[in-house]
Amino acid sequence: MFLRPHARKKDGKGHTYWSLVETVRTADGPRQKTLCYLGEMNSSAQARWLRTVEVFNDQGEAQQLKLFPSHVEAPPDDPQVARVLVKRVRLERTRQFGACYLGLQLWKRLQLDGFFEQAVDDDPADVPWSRVAALLAINRLCAPGSELAIEERWYPSTALDDLLAIEDGKINDTRLYRCLDRILPHKTKLERHLKQRYGELFDAEFDVLLYDLTSTYVEGAAERNPMIRRGYSRDHRPDCEQMVIALIVNSEGFPFSYETFDGNRADVSTMETILRMVERKYGKARRIWVFDRGIVSEENLEAIRKRGGQYLVGTPRSQMKRFEAELLKDDWTQVRPEVEVKQVALPQGEETYILCRTAGRKEKEKAIRKRFSTRMEEALKGLEKTIVAGRLKDRHKMERRLGKIQARHPSVNDLYEVSLRDTAEGVRLSWQMKDDRKTWRESREGAYLLRTNVRAGTAEELWSQYMQLTEAQASFRALKSELSIRPLFHQLEPRVKAHVMVAFLGYALWVTLKHLLKRRPAILPQPSTSGVENAQPLSPMKALALLSTLQSADIVLPTTDGREIRLRRITEPTAEQKSLLHQLGISLPERLDFHPKCSADLAIA
Image (cartoon, rainbow, N blue to C red):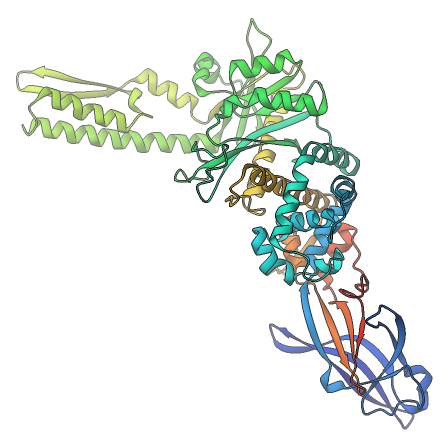
């Protein structure tokens, strides 16, 4: 960074103008970017080219200084003049600013700063615990990492010390761990607070609740954590012990509540616990529960009915046999180009069933059936050839070989009638396709069954409502990918639960950003070969990546009297960044003006 002179001639007279310039790297090579214009600097217009800057001394006292290049003669006897050594102007202390600032604005928009100030700032501390909680949540949103990684790598590279007014050297892994211990007891109040804020910000309603579960594995033995158990791993890590996380969101993905369970807890056994937990936190209400067939049981549905609730759930495929005749009829209603539905009401009962059929799913299941049928027939032909050739004569061994083939192909085994017959030539193997089973299998391919006690709504409306379950699945994808909730490194049960709570806070920020982008769509121009710009909406992660290039830095201006003037400033945003910030309703500060020891403009002797 340096001061650049610009010589101009006007009316036969020479004029010199100055600008503050920095060198930046671009795809086309180094380029010089003008930060600001200082105007004309010559003796004939002295009143116009004197430029001042407010600085602070080590005691925090403010004063005005006037900046001069070192080779320009300053006005005599002016104590406020600072002559700058142009060749020694430099840039220091670059920090990540944009993404962290966005995370902090989302934190404040949800009023989580005030919530945690009331919840955890009762005891005096070097750093208020509410600010440490903000740091943990913003890290989970922007660059998820362990507490040690936050201390050693991420936090020192960000401008959060300025944004949160935290003095140097005050953040370490011990303080981060202690913060986890302090925020965990406020889980229930936090969930209620977020539910209220989402209602105020987005008119979010929580009459329809989407419920789903996932698992996350732990690194290490975690012997002192009774929750960590081996169970069905959705992470495809059966070698690791795990815990189960249940998440409840509304139809738009806004979080309602979450719960943690032992790693070996079966999905179907969690529903009663969740119902009691929701009633304890929010009272009884006529809610509609939506969940998939892995959680369905008659006991769970009865528990919902007993509480006056309603449900719209997936159903095990074994129950589709009851509707074989309906599957073969042609009275389907097409609700999407590849989706057909029909509503079936049983003569006796208060429930309605919705048959659904998807063309893409049908082709997939048909291809799977054909592949396994081909494999089974090839295996049967191989066994038959072995028997005919006389290489296998013991009938008991034949039956064992046949049993192995059937066990290896359970999905199509019921389609075949297979037998070992005694003939004049000896024992022979025969098989044939069961036509009735094949017809039934073909009719159910691509089909699935929904079950509900909701009276209102057409088959299309109920199907659309069930498809909103993808919002819960999208929440888990965000938690596991963007927010990196897995793996768990904590070994103690309270710390593991607090880790999940921080991930929940990160998801609260993430889904807020998602809906702000949806409500105020951020559009970036994409190159098009036709010359017409294609509009592509931003995802939360792309928005964070776009703002991550915004930096804060110190402009250091050495003076001839041995001092250094340090100006802490933010880099100029690009047109795309300005557009995104405008659409999100966020304004960048003109300068970082907080505690002078960590973020103000300094004049250092």
